[in-house]
Amino acid sequence: MEASAGKTELQQNTDEDPSAGKVFVPVLFLAFFSTWIIESLTGVFQIEVASTFFGSPNPVSLATTGQLVTISGIVSIVFGLLLGVLSVRYNLKRLLLLGIGTIALGTLGCFFAPNFLFMQIFYAVEGIGTIIVSSMSFALVGEFLILSKRPKATGWVIAGGTMAGLVSSFVISLFFSGAEGWRSYLLWFALPISFVSLAAVYFGVPSTPRKRKPDGKEVYFRSFKQVFLKKSAAGCLIGCMFRMTIIGFGFVYSASFFREKFGLSLASAALLVSLAVLAFYSFGSILGGHLVNRVGRKRLLVATLAISSPVLVLLAFIPDQWVALALFYLFNLVYSLSNSPSVSLTIEQAPESRGTMMSMMTIFTTLGTIMAAAVGGVALVLSGWIGVILTFVALQLISVAIFFFLTKDPCQA
Image (cartoon, rainbow, N blue to C red; front, side):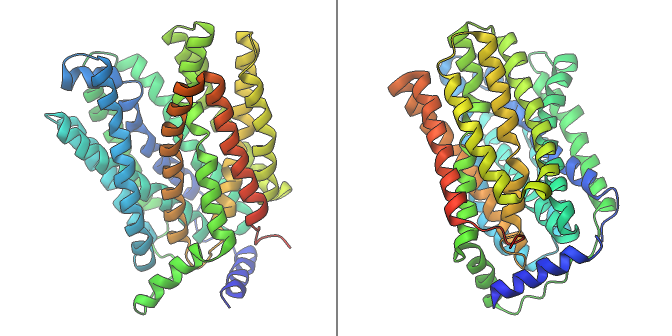
């Protein structure tokens, strides 16, 4: 019965006109953009934040500052479970507004933080807002756009996050490079972006999604059953978790890999590796969204993950810096083509419980990034950079197997 109901709804959404206006996708792009702004505190500004609260950027203070991400991730996972319930009962637009408001509150709290404890608390608050915005943005795409337009929309929404990284890097280098520049950055850049995003969502997202009338506890159990007891839906979640581990190499370890292997300076690594990754990742996300309808969600997802894997393997053994960089850019481009199909495939697994499904997807992708940091660190200690790269490739191939054998594309016969 549930499967037939899901297919019926998918068929209806293929035929109906979208109920959102032309600004709908740009507004969600901006909302997703706002979730990445504060990430610079543990990236570009990590040394400055450590100096502010611990006096000097020694290895211990840098490692402690880096734990902001870990604590925020754990809190986000816990809240994501609650969000899976809230999304059944409450209006998705209101939850999205709540998420952006929570990001603004967390940003403001980090700005005023008098010590590292307060910084930890409000950075985690911002993390809660991020998981709400991420989940509800994709759920709203599934709620309001016709089937053929969803992949392109998800590609643009995902690109909003990485483009935020690009814009933030340039803004910081131009205006906020001082010792206490991170506080000014939060007040004059991150916070205004949150307020603009809040206003844009309020006016640009339709006010009346499909009505939801919970009829007791059964409706909540039914939503989670559709997510976890359906093999294809559960396969998408687990596959997304393993797929996201490769982000650990791209965003955590890649700059250090190129600095150690080829002797790049910090500035060169930031320019050639970090910014280039964001640029290729953004472009690939958008391009992947345009390819989904031609290739198919599952086909494009499996193919791009499988093709990108050997490219990363070659990176471990190439002795020339520029050839290695070219391969690294190629890997990021091909891999990022899987962003839109992974979300598009997942969002269609439980059409009656999209809020819950996307909340769970955000939890599993967060688990993937946490796993990446831990596994990558162990591999680096035990077997060096070759071991790190081969480990991440193995994890990616696991995701290929999961998507290929355990998932089905409900939008194709």
